[in-house]
Image 1 (cartoon, rainbow, N blue to C red):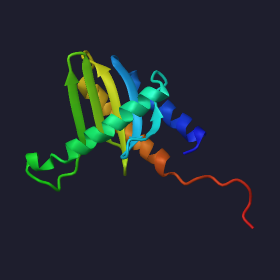
Image 2: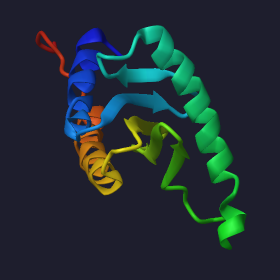
Image 3: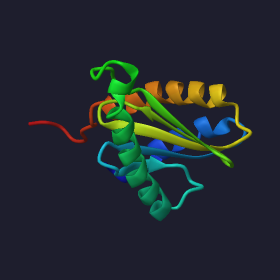
Length: 136
């Protein structure tokens, strides 16, 4: 992924952070690689969190039988801590969106913004590459 796409995706992540009490956002691949992260998060921290979040998604997906159907697709995971929440949702084929927030956040507002953002990210991630120059 080129730097301009990384910058554009990071800018798009800011939209979900408009919800009061939200903190950070990371777009990651299924194997735990950072595709983009919000500016308030260092690259090292984003890398560390992305690795853990990929494992969390895998663990969440493996518990589908607990809800009664092993074929049920995973949609999202929410973890609550004393100091806040971590939201993790599917963001397209092999991609996930994670957001952290304080304990005072409006959970519904964050989830709504995340799903809207996933729709926009899907268009960015699947748009064809631009070619410069002419084809001969």
